[in-house]
Structures are given as structure tokens and as C-alpha cells.
Image (tube, rainbow, N blue to C red; front, side):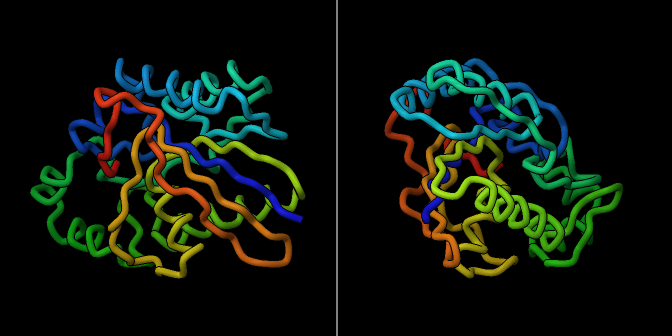
Length: 213
């Protein structure tokens, strides 16, 4: 039995443009992001999903609802699909974070697996375990199913790394475009397999964005 996942990153926000860490903060889509949501919805319009899940943050939920409006179905929002919690670094750009908290920012940039950002942050290990556990639960819940998941760049980074075995501290040397389509198959009793990664051909040139947050 195979579970077919379609993972979609949310559309663009103004904070993506500024490279500002959003984390668990509820930052809305900007005009380009809303256009991207419509374009990815159109690209998936002929597909039918047995279940649709999304991060409960509005930038993901609004992207997911645009897809649901074209495909049919109801989106289930969950905090378990949120971006990593960056603690004190949320709201800040990396430049601002390095200036205010140089030692802790260096640990963040090194992706130390067990570094927990101050003020409620998640370590990479905690974050990756959250995502992997949920993916495994959805795979078990929907054997032979087709499942849409709308989420965040950090979630897709963690997902790809555990599928490929790259490790928690691996560099992000691949693109995760806003409103990009990522197709992953899970063979029950076997591994996850990446079939398509970062497909943004459905986006117009003006709506493409390959920022990393």
C-alpha cells in the first residue's frame, strides 16, 4: 500500500521578503502570496484528496483553503504543522538576531540539534521529531490515500532531511519555493520517497519566490 502526500509551502508574506523569522507568529499572505495560493490551487484543481491538513497559521490556512475551494474537501488545521518556534528570534531578521544575541544566534545558524532558543523555542531535534511523528500518523491513518499538507519552509526542510538521511544540522542547499509542490510517497512498511520537489512551474514569473523563510 502506498500513501501519496502532496506537501505545499504557503504563499509569500512580507516577512519572507524581509527574511524575517516568522516561526509561530501569525503573519498573513501578501498580495503576491494570495496570487500564488490561487495559482497552486489551479495547478491542483483536477486532483482529489482523501484528506487535507494545514498548519493553523493563516498564511498556510489561506493557501490550503484556496486549494480546497478548487479541489473540494475540508481543511483540518493543526498547530503540529506550524513552523519551528524560534523563541527570541521570532520577529527579527538574522542580521538583527546576530546583533542582539550573537552567541545564541551562532548556535542557531550552526543548527545545533539540541539548542533550544530562549523564550519557548524548539530545538532542531524537537522540531524534527514533531514533524516526523505527525507524518507517520497521517501515513498510518490514510493507507492507499492521497493527502494534502500545507505547511512551512522549515517543516519541509526537516521532512526532506529525515527522508534523505541528511541529518539535523545539514545545510539547506535546496530550494523550498513559496507555493511550491512537493510529492512524497510512503510505502507502508518501507521508506518515504521524494517523487517531486519544489515544483513551481505553475507560478508566473512575478509570483515566484525562493526565500528560505
